[in-house]
Length: 127
Image (cartoon, rainbow, N blue to C red; front, side, top):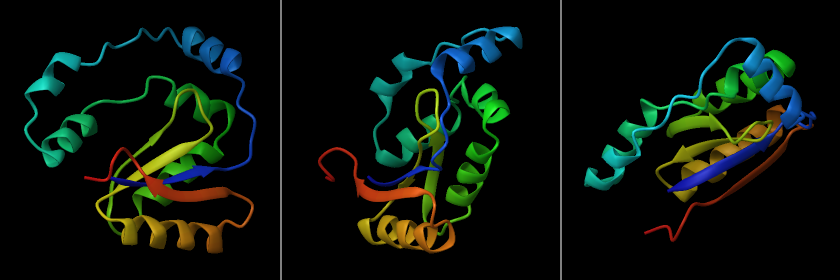
């Protein structure tokens, strides 16, 4: 799997994200990790991941709305299979099926959002 990593250059303190999350009365939703062992293909894994979420995404976006813009920009790119915020923000990632698509995505984002930090890379072995 290939990815594009994007950070919009804003500080999102982890402590503030968790405080916002708690203030909203949210409860952690444990991922269905046991299901991962039964997934037979990359497409099945992506399908599973698409049903999951990052519980900290909403509170982080409330603190730094540009994170929502990053996610929307990633999701709109050709070949983006999945886009999520990493951890408590502000870095986000988009997963792409090919290195060519990830590089093209990074090039598009760098051209349109010159103040964002953007990199394309390979997740895992690339097999």
